[in-house]
Structure formats: C-alpha cells, structure tokens
Length: 589
Ligand code: ZN
Image 1: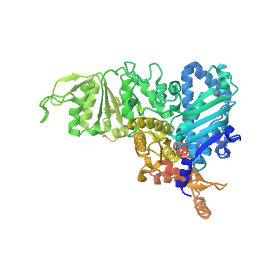
Image 2 (image 1 turned 30 degrees about the vertical axis):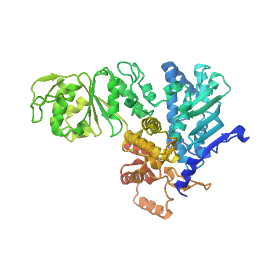
Image 3 (image 1 turned 60 degrees about the vertical axis):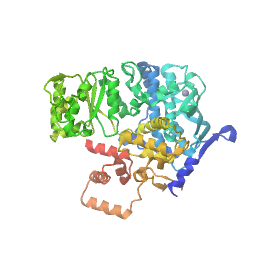
C-alpha cells in the first residue's frame, strides 16, 4: 500500500449523506479511536486529549465565564472572542482528523469534527445532509445540534436570546471545515435552542455561496481577528483619517493564536506613545508589516513611514543613506541629499536588521536618538529631527552586546519596548487561517480559481515546519495556485518541490487491520527485547537513575535531529508536545 493510492481515493471521494434520499438514518463512524486519545492522569494532575493538556470545566463555570464576558465586553465582542476561540480549536482538530484517520474514507475524516464536539460534551450532532466533493468544489453540510451546552450556558448567563448564540461551536465548525478542506467555509445557525427553538439547526457552505456575509465575517474574517484584538480605545486598524487599512498592509496580520494576538496587543499598547520599539523575530514573520501597522495606528499616521534594511546597504554608503549628504561631500555627491532620518521627520523610521550596523553607524544612530538631531555626511550643521524609530532584528542583540559587537547604550535606547513575533511553527493554529487568506488573495491576483486543496496538500501544509515562516507559506500558496489546473484542487506536488517536501506520513497497521498513517508517538519500530535487556542491565550495573537515562536520551535525540523537535520526538517515539513538555520540565529542575 502506498500513500499515492490512499490519497487519490480520498481526494476523488465525495461524501453524500441524505436521510430522505437513502431511506436510512445517516450515521457517523465509530468514535472509539478518538475517545482513546482522552487519557486521565490524576497522579500528575493532568488530562490529555491527544497530545494536548485538557481540563474538565463544569458547565456552570462556563456559564459564569460567559456572563462575565457578556457584561464586560458586550454582546458583539464576546461573540467575536468566542467565535475566534472556537475557530482556532476547530482548525487544530482538523490536524488531528488527518493524523488519526487520514487514510480512511473522507466521511471518517470529516466525522472527527462533530465527534470531538460530542466527546467534549458540547453537543450531540445529527447529520441531515452532507454533500462534499473536493474535486467539484461542492461543500454543503447540514446538521441538527441536540442539547447544546453553549445554548444552555447562554440561557443561564443572560436568559433567552433573540438570536442564535452557539458562537463558539459555530466558530469551531467553520474552523474545522475551512482547515480540513483548505477553503473558507462558513457555518450559520438557522435556528438555536438559545433563542427558544427546540434545537439548533446549522448549515455550512463556502463563504461565496452565502449572502450578506459581512456580519459573520466580522467575527470570522482573518483581518478582524487582529482588529478584535486591537479594539480597545481606538478604532481598530484605521489610519489617522479613519479609513480602514488596506488589505495588503494587513497581509501578515492574520491569526488567532495566543502568541500572535499577544504581539498584536503589545503593538496596540505602544502605538499611541512615542517610545522606540524593537521587533524581534525570525526572517519572514512579518516584522515590516508589524512596523507599518504600528505606524498606521499611531498618532504619526499622517506623516511619512520610511523603511531601511540596514543589511541591504553597503557599509560605506550606510551613513549617507541614514543621515544624508552635503553637496560635494565626496566624489559623486554632486547634489545635497536628504537621508532617511530627514525624510521620516515627524513620522516613523523602520530600521530592519539593526544588528548589522557597524561601529560608526551605531555611534551616529545613538547620537541621533539622544540629541534628536543629525548631521549630514560632509556637513557640520546640526538639523533637528523628530523621528520615532522602530528597529527590528532576527539576531540576539543582548548576546551581541555581551560579545562586544553591539553598543550597550544603543541597545537600551532601542529596546524600550520589545515585541516578539513568534515563528509560524509556534503558532500552528494560524496556518489554516493564513492558507485561506493567501488562497483568496492570490486567486484574485492571478485571476484564477481553484476548488481548494487535496487532503494530501492540507496534511503537508499543516505538518510542515516553515523555516521561512509566513513569507514561505505565502510563496507556497502562490506557487500552488499557479501550478494547479484551473478549477481543480491544489495538490501537494503543486506546493512543494520534491527536494523540499516534508516527509510522507509513515503508514502502519492498526489492530483491526486497516492501514493508516501513524501518529508520531507510534512511528517507532517495536523495540528489540534483548537490546532493551542489555541497556537495562548496564544502567542497573552503573546504578544510573532512570531520570538521568531519560534526560540523556532526550538530549541526544534533540542533538541528532539538529534541534528540530518534531524530528527528535519521532526518534524518541513521543509526540512533539510531550517532548516539549519534558524539555520544559528538565529546565525547571
Ligand atoms: Zn444554538
């Protein structure tokens, strides 16, 4: 059995469940495999759902939380927040669905969403009509939700509503379907028990098949996730004149993960001040977009935003570039010219890769920040400038200071307000949102329609580590749209070149004899009993504590994997989350 056959079957398959048409009550598959992922470890004070920690939260506590949310945020913001949380959880469970049932029928993979919802105690799902055909671009899901916990909680918190209230669950359904099929799918409640109906009746379709989606998208559109995080005192992501910020500026500002939203919150906190900001993060996380956004929501928004990548300018020209040149300062400087500082006067100057500045430039920059004045190269007159500096770096500046490569005084000037933008692999929940976002963007840009992604492509996108971060993901999606045939689904080979493709999932046989991709914890060969015996005996002979043995194994695996935790986890036969937890624990001890 090879993965090729498996995936073709999945991709071509369609789900069609229709109670009336078939004369049989449609049924979702057995959920024991998901239930087996739920493990209670009371001795550690932990509950595990797959490789994530979970808690038991009583419905009355959820209702109390909801009441507080409604009272402190108001209905709209509480709804946005809960929809977002649900969307994020749904997107995450799409990865679980693929790792758990990737090789089975499409209906089984799809069923993970409703079944997780049931297992977590939110709702009992009764499918009415499910019609999904990836190749034809058909997506229609109609279900009844019986006895929704969220509806009960809302009634308990705020009484009977006039509109549907299962916001978190609707977010979940939209997130799960959008992530699993790689296209924006929107769910709506046609009726809701929270509004006095006997049960909740939901329908999910591609966003472009609904009318009047603005209200729903206010809570679900990627940009609004950021906007919602920034709604505090000022209107979100509008420039000084009140016009909304254009889509291209918000391009990388898409996400619902806690790491991303925390960076956005910090951005919002500091935007209204004149403080210097230092943006920290790997290449491709969108540092310049963050800087632009900071400028757009600041009081300087009507003034210029000037950017300079310090690493892109030859060292001998850098000073002239930053501070300008007087006429005849050196050969070739025929005319006097303003530098970036002068051009950014009253506005914002963004200095990328600040760690590459040489000693002379560092000294001049420090002076400009301290004295608020500059001197052009070849001139002696001081010119005062009013510039807010936003610097960015992908190197550890504190370490560079220790090593004597970067001035400590300049570092403290720049590091007044650091904001760390997490790499994409630390905000995996956002991958699905970003995929949807770039899909829409590049279909419009290239005037081409595709029907979505094949299961294989989605599995690869959700499983990849993205060393090039959001920029790399953006390039992959653009390439996919160009490579895929018109109105067909984007497949894995349209996204990745053979040499850069992430590893294929390893297939294994489960106890009932069906072949499926193994989850990382299972991707090890059965240990050889005599080898185990040998190691055990040697460890006991040396009176070696079990913890030391475990730690040694973990350290060695991380080393062999070159620091790639997913790879190291595979070597150890555990999940990435479990490995990260052990490493964290080792650090604490
Ligand atoms: Zn409802």
